[in-house]
Picture 1: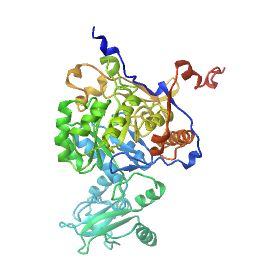
Picture 2: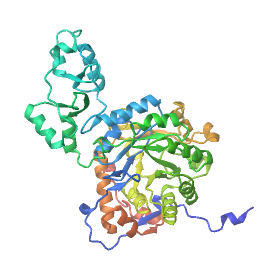
Picture 3: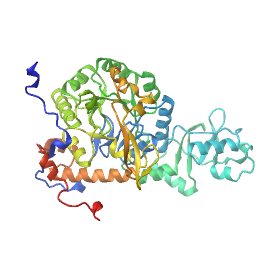
Picture 4: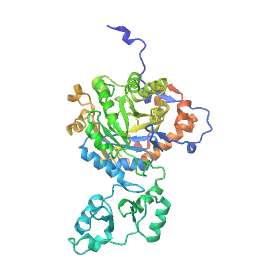
Length: 481
């Protein structure tokens, strides 16, 4: 027996193995700023990212996460066209000037306009000639009062349209729209060609969500999961995405690294690679890949992941973050870490951030939200939502994300499926997570994530200690007769 392998073992600590120690503080929770970098260029107001799982993040969740200051990562267990359409939906959800404008031509029918409005959930369409010059606008009101659906758009559209140039400011756009009592404001160039569209809905949303994650054009930030081996999907998504996220269970693999090196040269979006879980993995990524914008860290900690059980191999998220953060420090690499897996509470999130992460990726905490795919189900008088791992038999049956797991494991399920409690709107869940994080920072004495990295101190806790710091020795109210 090679006994040397059991000497000086690393201790792969998990969230429940440690506590953060309180420190001298002058920081009140309300003073804590949770702003962070999720990639080298992209900033978030809150360090929370939704997982690219098909029971967690599609367009609705990605929109909600971005509006609340976080980030959604669209899953890839679908066709390329479906994933691109989800991305387009997020980008069209809000913008100061919408560039990807849906239009009509004068010779189309009122029926055509109605179908497009219903399919795209929009209330008005600019009308352009064959060369792209603006000639009118048609709204839901025009359609509602039209008696003949076969009538031409030219017969019912508004021809005298108030327009603005591309140098318009937000405040000026608001003033014009309020003065003329209009909800849509076409943007044209000096020759009358349509260049974009401003809507009152988007302007109101900007006021309602001042801390939203946005790109340079004022659109919501969005990320999408990709495989390092699917360059075609990555290229298709690249036009719409701010961030592409490698979605591999074990990225520290020669084939993955080689494929990623090629892909990084072919896309303009920032790329987060992962998952990785050790110092050596981070070292190889730093030294072998150029242009990596972020690291997705943690292997086998997720509540619906059974990789550790099936294979005996794991790098629990907290341990993995500590390992990768150490490697980044040693190499002087400033690359954000996203802690992925096992986050069950704001306390777990605080520990991940204290260990060196810039953000946490959540699946379990968000799968029960209204914005997650799927309808709630009622079991025993309580509401739940369906949640499954991407390595579960049901997810693998769709085949699109089957290559997330390495080739030899394709015949082995590495995930499970089940129900999680319905949690209501994601805004409520994030509000509770943020409050818990701010309280944790206050106890440590840190005003920001970077200060937390410097001031946080960990201590191991015994199983008895773990029981003691939770509720104990009482009868919970829900069990009271």
